[in-house]
Length: 283
Image (cartoon, rainbow, N blue to C red; front, top):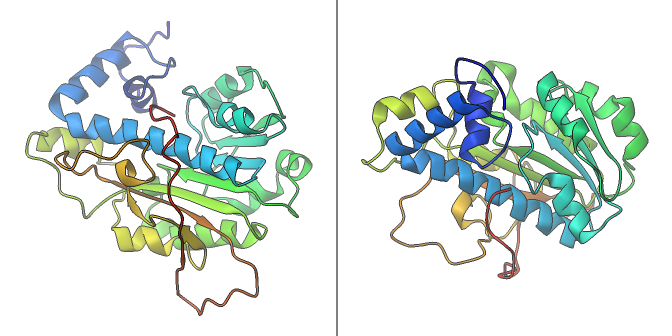
């Protein structure tokens, strides 16, 4: 059991979404947050479920290379476990700026293709893309799945997230996928959630609108249903129409061929029915 006296935000999050990298004090804090803001904890869990569905979707499209930026403490099934369940040869590179996260990820067994951890973050796209592990494990002539799940809301406007994401997009090969989820600034919270708890929980985040999140995808082709709240992205079951909206937007998009007929600024949506056989649950 992890021993520390004050709750750690990353470990409280881990406790909320069902991970094992947390201690008693973190679990107590997670229980309190759930009682005070149940839709916030539901949002975090749905975000993990979206991550799981997005990785499975990309793997089913034939992607065998993944970069998980801001990976966080592992929660099973992890990115490489999901990818390996579709193709055991899949390669996964985890990226996080927390050395404790790295230590935990490096302890995980790789049942299929190789995995690696590099200590860096989204604000240094050049360093991430040029890292020896990235260059040795990934083939930039084949599609890559890049995940920025619940990450960009930690990037301030002063850090220019649009420029950072554009740098990653431009480096990806044709046919690659970009996955984003992001805390929403235009989704109202249900009144049953404590405003003071939400203010504390969201204090370090830069909230953005659906339109702003959509702009991060640039000229990539959005996969149907486009940018939606997490519970609505290709769910295993139809969402409850009476359920309150959860304040995090998400989407998956594919890099088109250079000869794409898109004009500058246009976003095209890839249609197609969701796979209703996908399992739900935590990432």
